[in-house]
Length: 128
Image 1 (spheres, one colour):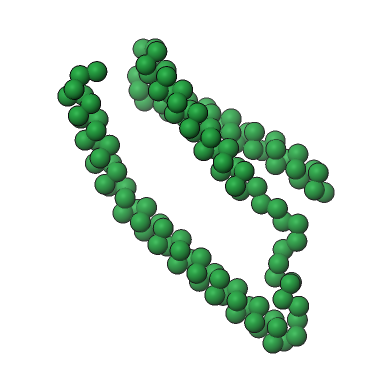
Image 2 (tube, rainbow, N blue to C red; image 1 turned 135 degrees about the horizontal axis):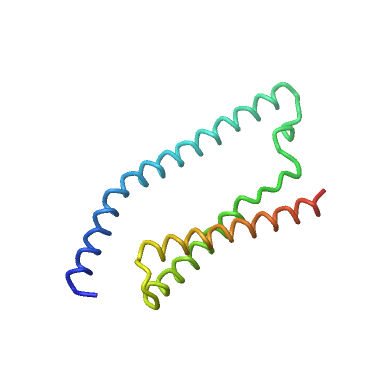
């Protein structure tokens, strides 16, 4: 790989990074705002239930185990393995960069989600 190609690739990466940064900042600010508003509304609901004499534990869902963290964790592990193997394919074979990276990312990301599905199915069966 020539020095000019590496410079062009770095310039492209920096351009994309600076274009995407405002989107991430807006998403983070929106997420924090939403979380704070949700906490305040939930507090008001609980206070209203207590004032009426109802049990505030009615708002707490029972046995609703969320597998979101497992799903995201396995997806990110799959994406990381896909990136590593994509880089290996680029160096070891004659595949172009895009085909190697995207195929491995989607393949191992999908494998991570399938594993997550079967683990979640097994755990739900044990919980019920």
